[in-house]
Length: 445
Image (cartoon, rainbow, N blue to C red; front, side, top):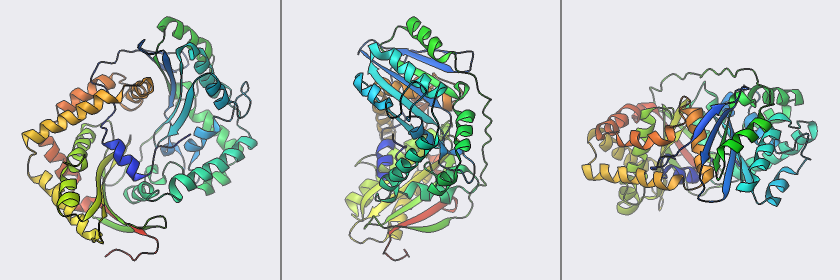
């Protein structure tokens, strides 16, 4: 299993791909089972493979204080087995039948999937229905996966250079919202949780009416619907999930903080801003601003700070888009002993230019081309299509067709909107400034 990457280097690389969608129209059908499970089917006979996925609308933001980490924990726990799958057999069944599978968790959702040769569609449906209908949640599984999660936290966050930087930023940007807790949460909370609390969390969130089943690939829709009804029809509907967004007071005065990392030798300087959630037009505008500032060697921050001044080893700007809010993060690694505060000045100068002047028509066209290229390549695999269809329904007001609309929406964003978004969201008094320093280093000045 894997959590959504918290290492900022990986996040930067992902952000440069643009929002996942496809310039070619993705055909699909969708419907609901009586128990509330939303089903999306995409037929593609080009390759004899099928992706079976279930997206549960539960992430770390659905956890309560003192019991963080449950959603990510269940990402692991629901591979333990079921009433009909022996403990530890889930992965073996998949691999022995020519498939691959995994899961990942974010602040907003948990995503499970299998990719099989298309003649194993029925097996994939059975596996996911077993996860939903007959999971085994017992003390042995909880204790086993607790140790697995602890080791993952050590490897992915605590012992990895810059591994905790996103969590440190979230703690500075969010006071009330559970985004501040990160995805893995605390091991203290998991150690203290009782078995009945895990069972209650499953009952609350892992019901069919809080999930989307998406199947993409070489399928016969009529036969697939019959199989879905067989395997998922008997799953009982759960209580409706009630979620209320925790509102944050706007940041009106800059916050400066320092974090230390024993795994690094080179410090980082970061400026982070709280921005609207992913379903807004402004969130898409911020994606474009990211490309202008740091999208490749011709981007503004790269040319100025890496190529010309040579005071930075690396620069980055990306919109960490989440459901309720986003975190817009700009940063750099100093070169040859350059002062982190000086890099912040460089970054601010480039942001100021965006706030003052419209980008050129040539740069605007280049930007459009970059996003279209990203769209063309993003949905080349059935798993990508399955996830993007699920995202549309889950995060864009049940608009599964969002996958086919987003490129058009981006093409309509104007140069004026780019300037205005920079003016609205990237102001010095609205941000967290984080000096990310080697543990033995001195506090930045």
